[in-house]
Image (cartoon, rainbow, N blue to C red; front, top):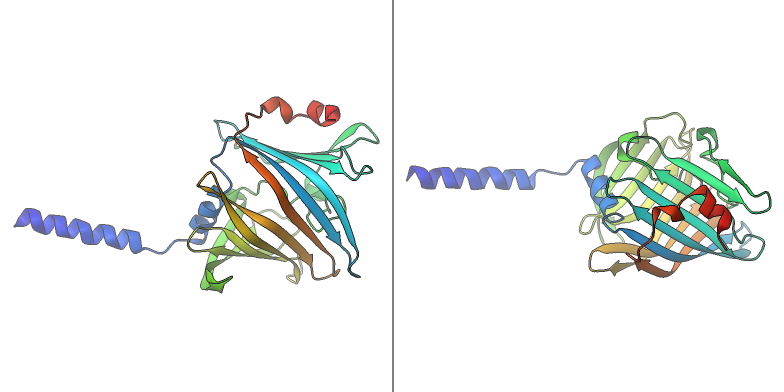
Length: 257
């Protein structure tokens, strides 16, 4: 009888642990796992810049990423079209033991420029995405608060406020909508240093790769203060093709053809 009682008590205790609500940090960490776990990926993307009058400018990019066994990760974005943008590239090095490092290469000068913390809020090649938006954004650099749960995009989303710990961020707060079933980012609202809404990022058409990795078909960043927007449209994505760390260096940026 005592053994049965102890088993029942253990079951009740474990069910209480399971039912314990997630924190904002835990929700965001689960969402980040959607973009991790693979060894490498190669992604062809169309970038569409839309100005305040509705005029469109299209570009194409090749995006590569890989993660080392020690957790360090690398990403390289290279413009492949049109000709005037071809070869311009951005390298992000995210080492677990240090802050992100970003490098911009311009073929016209044959120089690689380090992106400083004061320039993280600058636009990436005239788009509505900044260098900060394209960085790794480690969870330890932010404070998170779960605000509520609410319906979004025909599902239920956690709404989480993210506050940067560093004054170098160009945002005072980012509000994140993350679906409660698969922990996929659905929407994000970015607030400037005056706490005014600056931008909204919206994802569309998630696709499942290799049975476990979710990737949106399109990401749209809208700037409410300028009326401009940028769309990132996924054209082709391949995973675990055998990329090497030597493909994520300043030399590789210069030698890409």
